[in-house]
Structure formats: C-alpha cells, structure tokens
Length: 80
Image 1: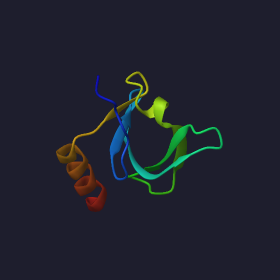
Image 2: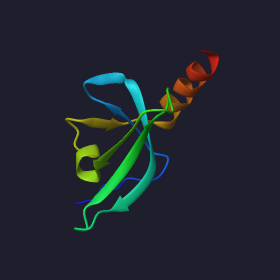
Image 3: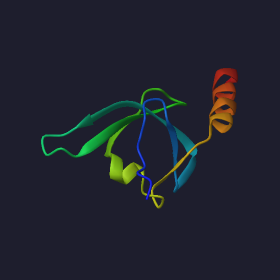
C-alpha cells in the first residue's frame, strides 16, 4: 500500500467548491504528532486555512489538482 503525503506547493480543490484553488504553504505536526498543513487560497491570497493532512487527503473533502490545471488557474488569476 502506498502512503499518500502532502508536499509544499501542492494544490487542491474542495469537493463542494471546485472553483476554489488551495496551495499548501506550510506543513507541521501538532503537539500530539498529528501532521497539519496550512492552505492558502491561490485566487485571493488572503484566505488561509489549516487542516490535518488526513482531512486534506480525504477524497470526500479535497482532490489534488494537476500542474496543468493549476497553471491555467494562475493565468486566469493574473488576467483579472
């Protein structure tokens, strides 16, 4: 079984809001050893949220975004 991990710069979309695009900007373990990641909204750069890595890797909550999709989202963001 392969173990899924989260890396800096990786991007995700929320399943209930596919227009939102989030990028991992910080990873840490809390006092109990549970890994967490802070996500920053790529479009607004203002909104940041912290989730446990288990929540981010839960396919019912988030899905990873491929690089080419993320690149096209950046292009749209820069044009607006």
